[in-house]
Image 1 (tube, helix red, strand yellow):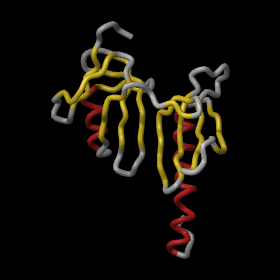
Image 2: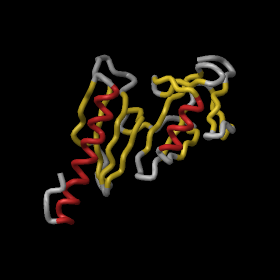
Image 3: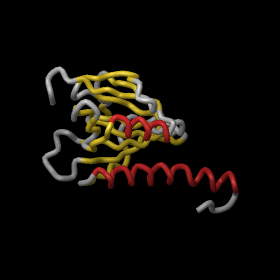
Image 4: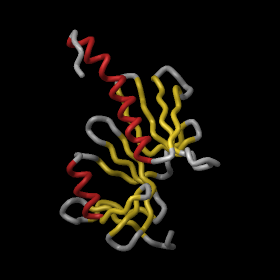
Amino acid sequence: MSENSEIRFVDISGQTIFTIPDGGYISATRPNGEQLFGHCVYSGENHVEINGKLYSIKEFAELQHYYNATVKPMEKPEIVDGYRVFQKYVVGRLTVFAGIDTQAQTDKRYITWQKTKNRTSNKNPRYFCENYEVVRDLFRRAEDEYQPKAKQRNGRDCR
C-alpha cells in the first residue's frame, strides 16, 4: 500500500464520485439484492486492484453501470462469524455468504455459508482454495433456495 494514495471511483462519464484511501473498502449493491465487498489497493492514478483483480477506474465504472450497482465506500470490512465477507446474496429468508478466512493456515481459506433470519450460527460451511469456486458455490446455494419456491408457485419443475 502506498502512503497518502487516494483511490478514485468515477461514474461512466469519468467524474469522480468518491475517493478512498489505499487499502480501503467499498460495497457494491445490485438491484437483485446481491452485495459485493471489495478490498482496494492503489495501482496508479487510473487503476485499482479490488479483491486481487486489477481494473482501470473507467472499466470498473462501466461494469457497475452495466449491473446497475450502487457503489459506496465502507469504513471497515463486514466480518461475519469471523470471516471477512466479500459477497452476500439474500434470497427470501436465507442469506448466503462468501468470505475469506484471513487467519487460515491452509490453502482452503475461502468459505461459503448460509444463515436464515432466525438462526444465529453458520449453516453448512464449505471451504475452497480458489475465489472462483466460492463464488460459483454462492450462486448454487442461492439458486437451490430459490428453485423450490418457484416449483411450488408454478406446480412444475422449473429447471
